[in-house]
Image 1: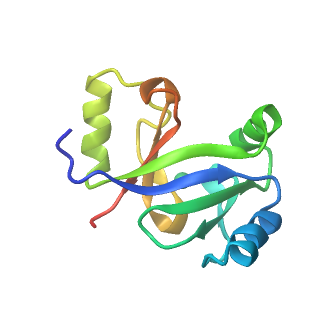
Image 2: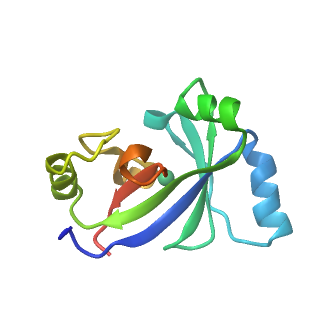
Length: 136
Ligand code: CO
């Protein structure tokens, strides 16, 4: 794919209790954590652990959502891996042409106002993949 440098943006962990998760990463491991941000579009509260790139994203649902169902079914754990792309629209077009199953055919708004899209695990070897547009 010719959409620029691919790089790990973050790994996301679904948690039931964000405060308890933050207490572990911040107080036990001593890592820097960001403030909590509500991402309406995905119905989750989000906090980042560590510094970019390669941060850990803690996501916790504040109402019924896909993440609630994930927690009910599988419990807390790895939810998705996020990679950076330069041109998200072009990347999605290329994937569509190649028949990659997408959850988002168009970009949506992610944490910190970024443009993101999710690729179905069937298209990414069993892992829910988030693409984050970045100019870095
Ligand atoms: Co994410």
